[in-house]
Amino acid sequence: MTSKSSEVPLAVGDVLEVVIGQIAHGGHFIAHAQGRTIFVRHAITGESARIKITEVRSKMVRADAIEILVKSPDRVAAPCEFAGPGACGGCDFQHIDIARQRLLKQQVVQDAFRRHARLDDVEVVVESVSGDQSGLSWRTRVRWSVDSSGHLGFHRFRSSEILAVNTCLIATQGQGGVPDRTYPGALEVRSAQGSDGELVISNAASGSVSSRRVNQEVLGRKWNIDIESFWQGHVGAAEALVRAVLDLGNPQLGETWWDLYSGVGLFSGYLSSAVGPNGLVVAVEGSARSVRDARRNLQHDQQVKLVESDVARWLAKATDHGPADHGLVSGIVLDPPRTGIGPVIARQIAAQEPRVVVYVACDPVALARDVEIFAAFGYRLDKITGFDAFPMTHHVEVVATLVPIPGHDQIS
Ligand SMILES: C[S@@+](CC[C@H](N)C(=O)[O-])C[C@H]1O[C@@H](n2cnc3c(N)ncnc32)[C@H](O)[C@@H]1O
Image 1 (cartoon, rainbow, N blue to C red):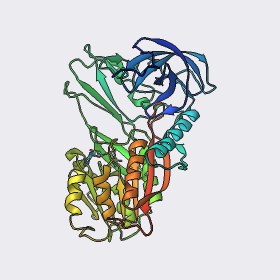
Image 2 (image 1 turned 30 degrees about the vertical axis):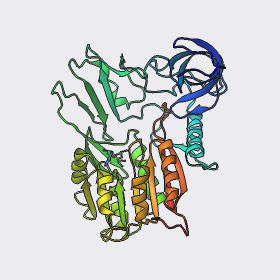
Image 3 (image 1 turned 60 degrees about the vertical axis):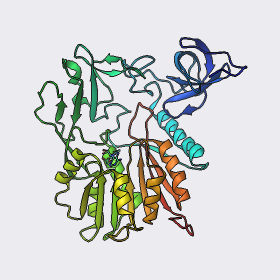
Image 4 (image 1 turned 30 degrees about the horizontal axis):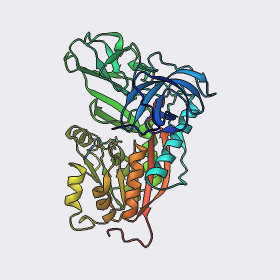
């Protein structure tokens, strides 16, 4: 594609001086130079910086801030020696004061709703979750890459190259010794630390795994899960999200709830107590391993029905004839992967006419798009809260509720 006439072509490696503007989704900040919008990493709004172009595409130019000429008062020395331009691609906010990180995430969520849901007045607070230690030592599970000499590391940003590391400061301290040894021949190493403190390391190539199962306790309930099944990453995230789902959804005795994208059944475990023995929770999950874990962990919860299926496929069958045949669905929890759900699933959910949908989202843009889609099917955004479940990175977890729009025909 050709450049507009006012644009001077930029090339990878060019160094420019810019003023850093607003944050954009994905851990970048916006800058403008030579007629182009540039997405800059390692900067903060309001700074002046020398930036180096790292990628030029027809619609997107990326750059790293390599020298800060005027510093933000919220700039701090990155605690991790592996963070920074050209280094580990994992943490993009290590150079930002933790309180400002959360304000930036709030801005990203609000901006997502403005752009993708046409909602200009969404107020959201991004809270720290329990166990927060100024953004470090929170990650209960780590997938380490392994370089050709068997050392553990992480991919450099947007690169297949592995940067060997001797520590990961956002991992819980019990995983601190994991990179001390080498894992020759392994493609990937997984480590996890349970809430009982036990460290589990899974390294398929060495066959040295004694246990692949991790113990977690959340709100007094014990969970035992395979290291490869999905589990919330932050030490306090599972509890924060369960509380949010219960507080915002307010499940009642005797109700029917669906827990879609249910993983090992985390939310179902607590919805089960809330709806009681005369209620019903249908948990739908696509991973056979996670459903096996759910079966094991929820074996005494008679009111939970576990379904191993693709959510779209299950919904197509379950909602074939309008509202589900097993009675009124009072509430539906959605915790989809980053891509969100899209119109087909949103329509099927709205057709059930639940009194509330509780949407747990790890991508605010996908959430905002789905909120816009739900509006067409008669559901509006009601409450929203954010959690800093991934400190030091740009990621944010958001829980939102959708409720019926009075007078709207939900299934039209
Ligand atoms: C973000 S996790 C949430 C798991 C669970 N709610 C929790 O908090 O622990 C999303 C889950 O959706 C599952 N999943 C992804 N795509 C799916 C699909 N199309 N159908 C069913 N499950 C799917 C994944 O296996 C994963 O367990």
